[in-house]
Structure formats: C-alpha cells, structure tokens
Amino acid sequence: MQRMSDASASRPVLSVVRGEPAAEELAALVLALAARTGWTEPTAPSAALSQWAAKSRQMRPQLFPGPGAWRASALPG
Image 1 (cartoon, rainbow, N blue to C red):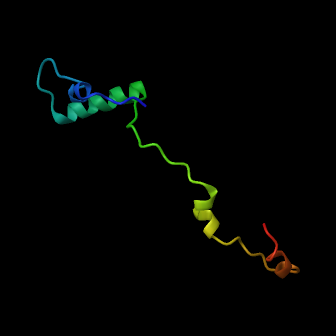
Image 2 (cartoon, rainbow, N blue to C red):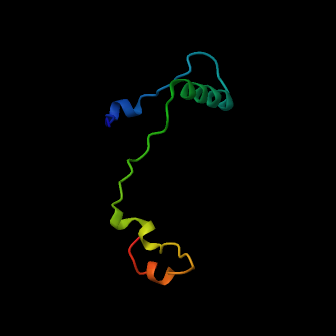
Image 3 (spheres, rainbow, N blue to C red):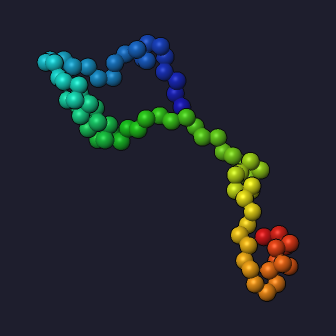
C-alpha cells in the first residue's frame, strides 16, 4: 500500500471550475464517479487470526442424543 505524502494529501481530488453546485449535486457527482471507477474506501488490513484465538473454539460441539451418544461425546470430533 502506498503512503501519501503531505503535499498530495492536502491537494483536492476534485475541484469545481465554474458555477456553485449545491452539496447534494456534488455528492451525486462524487458517488457517480466512485461507482464508475470502482473506487472503494480504503480499509485497514485485517489481521488473520490463528485457530488458537478463534471464537469458534470456545463453543462446544452440538450434542446428538441417541444410542451410543455418551461414548461419542468423549471422542474428539
């Protein structure tokens, strides 16, 4: 991922050359341009969790009643 310099971070991405559009008109234009180019808001990279920290490990497996269920409950799944 590229880091933006201070100069490029302060430079506007979009500027109005003529006229005075309303806030709603600018919002519609930005939305249309973002949809057209496929741009999405940058997100923070998600840290991959190890299986050791997975929440699913804290949940017990589903128990099935029936013949031999007591024996199967002690065996690893």
